[in-house]
Amino acid sequence: MKGFKIPEATISRLSVYSRYLENLYRKGITTVSSADIAQGVGVTSAQVRKDLAYFGEFGTRGVGYNVKELLDHTLKILGLNTTWNMVVVGAGNLGSALCAYRGFRERGFYIVGVFDNDLTKIGKKINEYEVLPIDKLEEVIRENNVEIGIIAVPAAYAQDVATRLVKAGVKGILNFAPTVLNVPDKIIVRSVDLTVNLEVLSFNIRRD
Amino acid sequence: MKGFKIPEATISRLSVYSRYLENLYRKGITTVSSADIAQGVGVTSAQVRKDLAYFGEFGTRGVGYNVKELLDHTLKILGLNTTWNMVVVGAGNLGSALCAYRGFRERGFYIVGVFDNDLTKIGKKINEYEVLPIDKLEEVIRENNVEIGIIAVPAAYAQDVATRLVKAGVKGILNFAPTVLNVPDKIIVRSVDLTVNLEVLSFNIRRD
DNA sequence: TTTTCTTTGTGTTATAATTCACCTATAAGG
DNA sequence: CCTTATAGGTGAATTATAACACAAAGAAAA
Image (cartoon, rainbow over all chains, first blue to last red; front, side, top):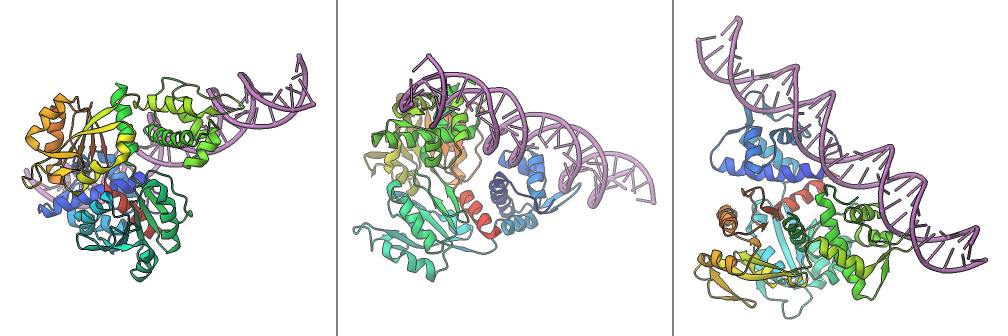
């Protein structure tokens, strides 16, 4: 089964499985079945097995999976056996919230710089981070081998920021601006669009 | 074509089309083709037409779509012809950022209450909102016909909050806690999982 | 009018993702 | 050592989603 084209949805679920396994591990649970995982994260057990099968055979028939072992495998698959350096562009409310979010560091994602073009924000501290002028963006990216950029600026500036991030060598972008970004194919973009999410809710609520 | 089962992805895209149309409208553009929209939001023109076809025939062959008319249709479809009242639970960094986000109001989503259980936060102001004690949650929901609840609390508290929201009559939940929520089928849940998004990025970057 | 040009709407085809169903490996118990 | 129960792996079937390709409709020009 190894070496197939892998659905994007499989990767998302793998991330969820991974977090679930981490919880089990912390609780001292050593073995888990696909049915348990399925129950825990709200999918079917066949789905869990299929997802894992893309990457190898990790379980023991009749027994299940070893929690620690499977956790390590999922982390490895997701690229979390190394750490990641990130920059956050935009030191507004959202940027600040992202800087304060502990969950990133726990999974190996480190913020190494926060940037803004607003002079009143530059120099201020957000948690341990001092807000830097946007001119320093490229420098910080290059000096820290930053591979991921987070865009937390208004929609109107998002494309400019994206272009600069790409030019400076970033490989992936997490975009919170409500706009479609134009970047080269090799750059990976994930957009988190709060309004779209609310509007899907709105549609689904009104539907029934 | 009307009356089919509609893909979730279609709804998400409709929200994006709607926002794009709003931009065109503000610019004074009156007519648009499916190819234009496709270009603007990064999909194929066939996709745009198929998505719209689920809800009716809005265009004129040989011409395209009237921007204002199509905008109104998309808003109506998404349930945005009326406004929505929401509560935000959790007045931490993320909760604060959400309260400050202007984009919600622009699309008819109003926050009518922000809640926390941390005594040091209660009574403080976040933008125009005073943080209320969590005990008042049910009261505010009932008095304001709140239909949407936003969960911005740590994972450990998310399920409790969800249960309370549902019990108080909320119909949809936007969940920012990195955990799977257990709620009745009729309740619509959308989860925004920042870590999952980063980990999908991580996987895709390391892959090549 | 009639012709030409454009762009929609949609039947059809292709692709992708999920679920089903069962075969197989392993552990544990007699 | 054999039997039974359990749970993983996976090919096949199903369902869902997206792309293609073209006929039909309307506008504009001749």
